[in-house]
Structures are given as structure tokens and as C-alpha cells.
Image (cartoon, rainbow, N blue to C red; front, side):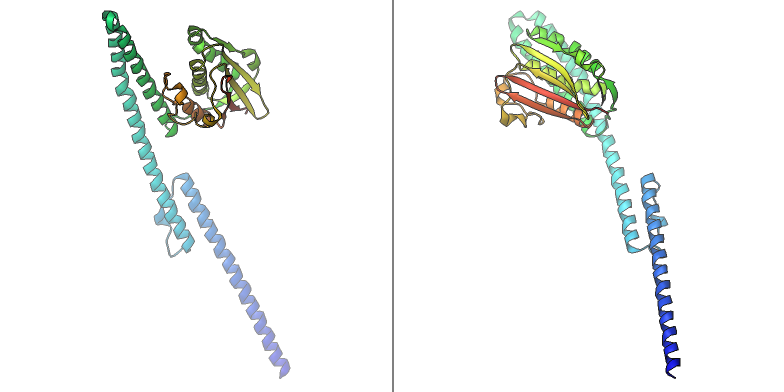
Length: 305
């Protein structure tokens, strides 16, 4: 009797063990199916082919249902963002187009008035200067808006630094000469040196640094040089200008920031900010070392590869 009871208990134990194994296998299979469905959902979302209606609540676990809701909501938000970007693109294009012709006409009228009204020449020249400042501000804001909204994409690729330096030197040589300053471009240091950057927009960023250096230098001049490191290549713009206080060095890259020490000089305080944005979007960065009375060195770092 005891033997029979023991056999029954043993068989019951085996049955329970088999039941547990079957339940475990079923759970693993269900989990794999669930993971497979979730992978399929994520992949379709990445491909842009996701449809929430093909995932039935009765067939999916709660987490799958929530994932489907999240992906659907994300797709709606993405579509809204694209629509807003298109609106912004149109607005920026309209601003650029609608202001270009009136400003050009105003400048032309100012030139004509300057020739005809000799007695008011100084006033007209001031007016002309303000119009040019406004034109520069509008164009800079348009460029910045295009960069910040992703409308205008940069295309970094391996380029020779010598071409960048030579073109920058040619653009600003006359401006430096007009002010009685030297502009030394040490292009021989850049021979054979390459970095990853968008030539057109990096020239814009470098040009802003050179323009600032010339603007705030009264004697001496500006030197442009190159230093190659393992991961980055640095283009340095060194001047013999007024210098920047330590307190202001972190602020000069801010949008519309202008030091009170240069408030009487021309400028709108957007050049350095724009330069930083251009370099940042190419995985680079800007660095500043300056001392009052001893000039400044702006270093533009670009990825070597």
C-alpha cells in the first residue's frame, strides 16, 4: 500500500514538473513572439511604414499596445515638426527676398543724395552706414535661422586647409590694408594639412573671426596660422588688438552680445555666435585666449577626420 502511494506521489511530482516545464516553455515562446512583434513595430516605425491598426489589443501585451501608442504619437509629432519647418523655411525665404530689394534701393538713393547734397554729406554717410548695418543684420539672421532650424545643412568633407586660408586672406586683405594693419596668412603651415569641414560655411565662420580681429585692432595686425593635432586641426586668428576681459570671454559667443567697451564701434553682436554655430554643427569648437592690451587669439578647431 505504501509502495503504491509512493508511486502515485512520484508520478504526481513528475506530472507537476512536466506541467511547470510546459508553462515555462510556453512563457518563453510567448515572450519571444512578443519581442518579435515589438521588433517588427520598431523596425516599421524606423522605415516609416508603421500602422497602429494592424496591432490588435487582443493579440498584444499591454506593453506592446503602449509602444504602438507611443510610436503613433511620435509619428504625429514628427509630421507636425516637418510642417512647421516648411513654414519657417518659407517665412525665412520671404523675409530675405522682401527686404533685399528695398534695402538695395535705399542704399542707391543714399548714394545719389550724397552726390547732390554736399552740405548734408556727413548725415547721409551716417544714414548709409546704418542701412548697411541693417542689411548685414538681416542677412546674418537669415543664415542663422536656416542653420538652427536645419533648413540649411552643412556638408563636411576632407578639404585642404591651405585653400581655406588663402581664400580668407584674399577676402580681408583690402580691409586690413585700408585700416593700416598687416594681415599675415601663414599658408605654408597649412600645406598638406587636411580636415573635415564644409568649405563655404567654414570660410564664413573664419571670415567672422578675421573681421572681428580687424575691427578691434588699431595698430599692428592679424596673423592666421594652422596647428595640426591628432584628432583636430586648429586655425588660429591672432590679433594685436584691445583684448577681452576674462569676465567677458565666456559671453562674447552669445547672440547679440556686445561689450560696453566697444559699444561705439560698428557691429550687431552676431558674428561670433554664427561662427560658433557653424563650427559646432561640424563637430568642432571655438576657443578664445585673450588679455587686455595684448590682443586675442581665436582658435577654430575642426575634426581631422
